Image (cartoon, rainbow, N blue to C red):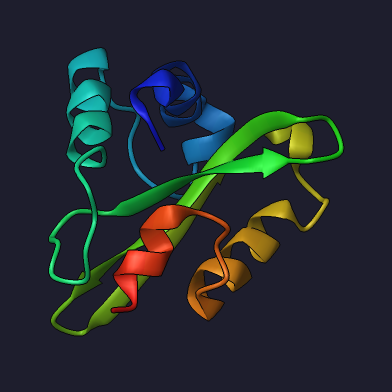
Length: 113
């Protein structure tokens, strides 16, 4: 995820259908803080989320975000997906790829070292 993804991130984090089972609706300042906390380069010792954009190649559009954060008990994985793209296994596949380490993104290559 890059700074260019703020609008996507904001839309996902404030869409009540998207966040219904995740967290309470944040205000704009909270969204900005969450977004900025995910921008620094990630490594296996990071305390922040590795957050990646989900791209639907069929429509060449970013449709969500996926990722994980490591903690002392293991890892927490998650995703936020645009409601227009539900029911297509996009989010499930994104988590499968993240957990398998096959993310087509430079960050993941350095992650496993």
